[in-house]
Length: 231
Image (cartoon, rainbow, N blue to C red; front, side):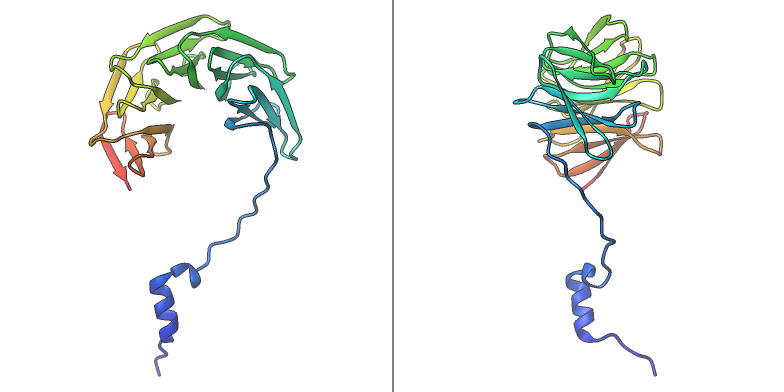
């Protein structure tokens, strides 16, 4: 005789599948830090390095055991990345900074309010500037800036792409930008209005993936500029 599911099980599955097919538990541990932790990256020393933004203005280091060390900086730091020289590089409100794993800090003034930073394919650090520029800084501290063609863009996230260029968010303009190591910029408009784009990363499929928090979407753009959105 074929056995049927009890009616209460069927109703529960329709209302909430999680009642019958629970997800595996995840253990979360939280460690108190200073004020407003923002960017984070893996360091070459096996620890995690992070920024503490407005209200703290520090670079933090946390071991996998949870031991925290903090280093004051002059500006408001946001993005941070591991550089090709074995140091950590960070974007701050008044420039770009470099911190060694021993805590030695060097800061380079930039007037455009740097936001996020990443290592480029050319061995330099590339960063976004709030005022509408993409910046490049060599590990020796030489800075080059490239204005973004669209006005009032507010570029945020930036990442190296699979095509040897840097891809970045133009938050207010609702566009994705691409800049070559020689400074040539192309822009791709996202369909629709009320866009507010945030982070961007290269995916395992060779495309760029980015967030759109006004529209509650994750979106994908190929290196040819084809865009797909996922609600």
